[in-house]
Length: 239
Image (cartoon, rainbow, N blue to C red):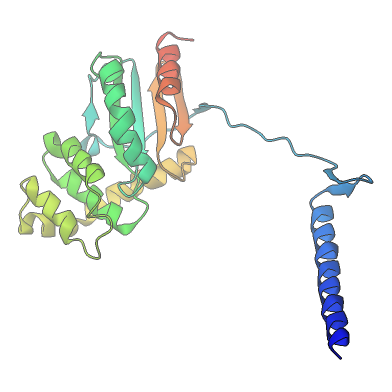
């Protein structure tokens, strides 16, 4: 009886292995693999298409003067429109680590004008965006810096920690309530976001439109600063 049980157990294991092999073979075959007598090889390998660093685009950014918060001189040869969400980790990294270098090498040198554009991807990011616009213009970037530096507001179960940061910049409870109730401000932010989707097919953050006399180019996602710097230098040189 004991020997019979062992045989049955071995038979079940062998059957399971056979089913596994058949399923695995079917899956690999469906993916384009064939058996060459020794191993499975891909019969028609796909060629990965690498996206270019930047690409030409047309269309208007659609940001009103009322919502424009700029760093750098107005007549700079290049303008960077940076679409960012306050809840985006990659946007935070860009703002904390790349933007200071851009400011040092290009913005403060009069070569580039930088404009932060809110592209909120969730409700809390929209609330933060509205508060930043309700502050005096000269406090806009300091407030953005503060929120990217301190993430407690982002992971809080309510908005009070976000509001506490706004109060540090001089807003009162009445100011915050009025800002939250500002439907035109909400509409302005959403219209600019929709414009970016319609005109440039921007669907994620960070995304950048770099505008100069030679037109507009778009850069999607985070980039190594050295590559970003080399790109800007080529644009400035007219290459």
